[in-house]
Image 1 (spheres, rainbow, N blue to C red):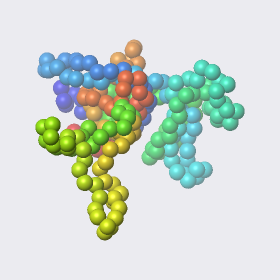
Image 2 (image 1 turned 45 degrees about the vertical axis):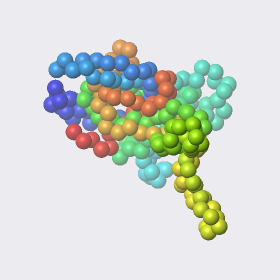
Image 3 (image 1 turned 30 degrees about the vertical axis):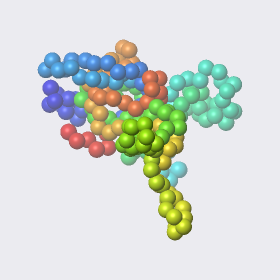
Image 4 (image 1 turned 90 degrees about the vertical axis):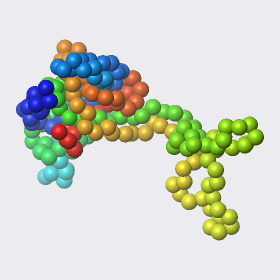
Amino acid sequence: MQNDFCRLAMENKREIFLMGRKLGMTQVYDGAGACVAVTAIEVCPCPVVAVRTLDHDEYVAVQIAAEKLGNARRCTNSMRGFYAKANLPTHKQLREFRVPDSSEYAPGEFLDLSLLHAGDMVDIRGVTKGRGFQGVVKRYGFDGGPGAHGSMFHRRGGSYGQREEPGKIYKGRKMPGHMGAVARTVQNLQVIRVCADEKVCLVKGSVMGANGNLIIIRTAKKDKR
């Protein structure tokens, strides 16, 4: 089964970059009968809005959009004109991706699930769940102090600074603060199944963020197969 995944992945030469929404986790069975935990991602049709070239823009990239904006009045005139150049309606999401060669793409072209095949290795980027203001035990995994009532030191971080010399706390010290709600990337996740009719792909393992979060899918930069 692994050889079939590799063969299918080699047939897909075009670089993958798509946007979608995390639906949640479930489980499926592979060809050997093993139960595999997967994350379901609803992939949006992503039109190409603009193409950046080396001669005109001094770098090579492709800009794609996702999720049509229902109320056009929420968009500025400049953004409406930007989308009108590609004969597209305004969209809610717009992202730019660096590519080796942008000549393969044209404004108005749609990128969809046809880019994905079972066995592809992808990198997925999203925003983690926000945990609010947390202490060092939850934020960094500190052990804390004894659990007895008289210790008066249970979930604190201990001593953070020094005395008169240097008389300050150095930057980077692990202290209580805001936790989560940051952009993260998970590398080398395998596409297990592509459901074209439902516009859903199943990716092995977990993906960061809450259900409904925006997810960016790209070709794996460090394919370890």
